[in-house]
Image (cartoon, rainbow, N blue to C red; front, side, top):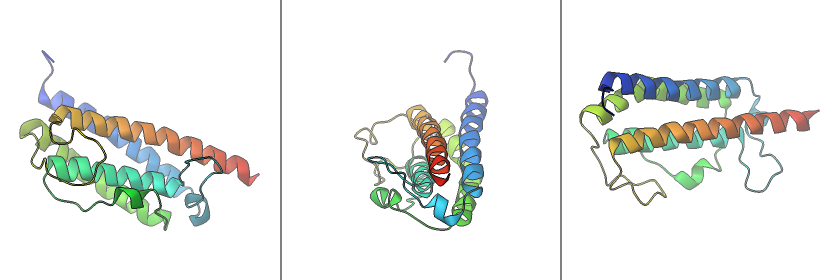
Length: 160
């Protein structure tokens, strides 16, 4: 990326990820406990709470464990079964929003600290570049924000 500096890349990655996380938090904050924990009647669907829990787990894994070397425990399968108070999960999203910029800086200045971290189904975790990891996080957050929006809309339609 000739002409693109680390600060510009960092600002872009942080801004896009933060936008997705902020929208997830806002959607979840407007839901009751029941709404947040309801799974739509669709094959393979997840509750809003599970979707956001997965996003927190995914970002903690790739950003916190792989990039920053923090060894944040992850049970990926349990993320999709998670349920709880949406306000508590909103607090987790805010925690993540505060920590993520530091992880981006580590990725862009030092690279990857822990290629042995456990918690993904991806086969390329041991060889992925720091840029791939950052773009993977941004893609996953964007994808799951769309899933969350559709899930919210389906649940709202079913409430009427």
